[in-house]
Length: 381
Ligand code: SF4
Ligand code: SF4
View (cartoon, rainbow, N blue to C red):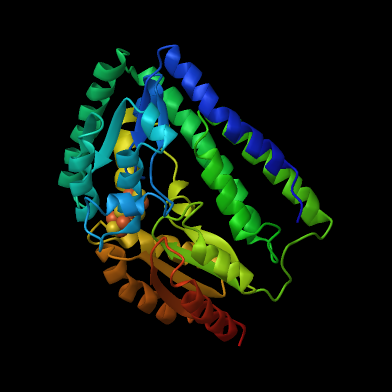
């Protein structure tokens, strides 16, 4: 399907680096983030520019393996490799890196990243259900606020924080409306198109531009849907992709599912539905931020009940026909959790479930293609 708004997305993406460069020369600070647990509102409230540094490409992994063990998650190796080879412009722009103690590999990698940039580590609790975890996390968020104030020279008032919350909530809502387009059967937008829009707008310096553009995508695609246009047909298997973060460059499984005749109708991932929970605008802002971020349903939490709840909601909401759980190699938390996720999907929804473990290389593409096509056959059956 020909969506003209993609032209505009490309244009703004190309302009974005120039805009950040100019803003930096005018004195604004750039803060690099890696994880959905890191509250970007604190950077926005301090007039800094938050950028995402999560590595999604295979290119820098060889260089990373000179320092990091080979049997480590490709996301960690790619992120480190970009920093070590100085090949990511967003890393180059960053004045400060924000890391967090999520999985073992990532938190130890951050210790090594400190060689390249000043780093602030958020100590993340490992569970979400005790008041103790929340009060500890609240103090961590407060410590980060103080670091941002020191770094930028800007005092973060409640008013500035509330403005930042309103802006990011607006962005989350726009993203949700965009993703919800795929609730229509057949979906008027492919999983690869959704992934591209979410991924690229995620880098925009001006979040307002991203919100406007997502709204334009929605308008255009809705118009086409009304005329009956869709890349799929009513029998196309609708797949929910769950698990590790995926982006452009680490999209192999999404591509294979859609080339094999399926549709990735929804993403229970960090760039997908996990990122659309809004922050309570009525509460004291720092407390509301702490609560929202701690509730992120990632497998690094033990237990991780939010993921099951979210999966249930999405399976029903998107009329899903099958679930694919993606784990990056050597990601122990998602790998172990996959067993319970599979049982949950099969027992409660009687849906076919496929667990895939892979990395960012293309070495197993053929093998994956065969497994995915067999799975889609089973879903159709
Ligand atoms: S999967 Fe978990 S650790 Fe990784 S970016 Fe998402 S929230 Fe952070
Ligand atoms: S995918 Fe798994 S191992 Fe990789 S950074 Fe995320 S939680 Fe850690």
